[in-house]
Image 1 (cartoon, helix red, strand yellow):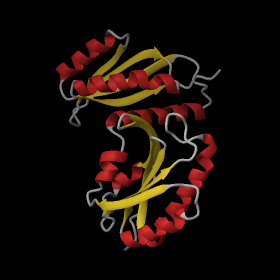
Image 2 (cartoon, rainbow, N blue to C red; image 1 turned 180 degrees about the vertical axis):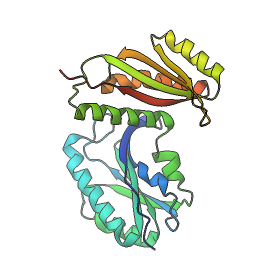
Image 3 (tube, rainbow, N blue to C red; image 1 turned 90 degrees about the horizontal axis):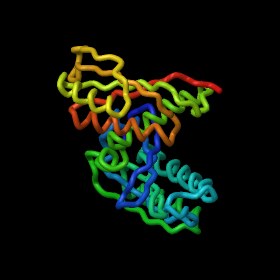
Amino acid sequence: MKEIPKHQEQWEFYFGQVDYKLTSINVDLGLRDIAPIKGLSNVGYITVKMNNPREDGLSSQEESETLFQMEDSLIKAATKDNNSIYIGRNTSDNNRELYFYIANTVIWDKQVSETMAQFPTYQYDHGHKPDESWGGYFDFLYPAPQEMQSILNRRVIAQLEQGGDPLTKEREVNHWINFKTEPDREKYAEQVKADGFKIEDMSYNGKDDFPYSLRISRIDKVDYGSIDDYTIGLWQLAAKLNGDYDGWETSIEKE
């Protein structure tokens, strides 16, 4: 296997549902820039049955250190000599599942078996299958647009917290939405005004597929429990009206 292309790792997690059960997914978003990687044409999985999961099927604080040690050991062994690349994990239904893309499956099987022998109290299964298009990455682990919006929300909130914002104060929050047509923008503006949003600006940029811009604002909370409630609603309405929700911005408010 030749050297794997370098990329900027962007590890993010998000919650979702798999087979109607709560799941937590951790994935390297940065791989999107170089995937699929030629030569790594098999997707491999390692499914570990957790010994002390939470009631909702996710990992517990008590077991997390051991699970992270196991994950680190598997990554170190499996990625040795550029035989594979680690793409992410899925935790759900009392199991933790780790995913790799592999060059030599025989070597990988041996690496997994030898590593898991270090954790004799855990039951596990592993396997692999051809996946040249990296469907396991793009179609399963990689977040859907709505899930990506939640990730972007967390990034903005993290910046607010780094600036000393305790996230307790309501404040003006601005949102940008772009549209393909002016009538779609008008429909969107009318609907959000009914939800208490103020129309701040309408303009025409003429530079891309969504040339009709709209900026709206409203006094809102920006804590982790509140932000998804209204931003995802704005995102969904934009998608319904052929628009593109382009994010939000607010001021840092300190005590």
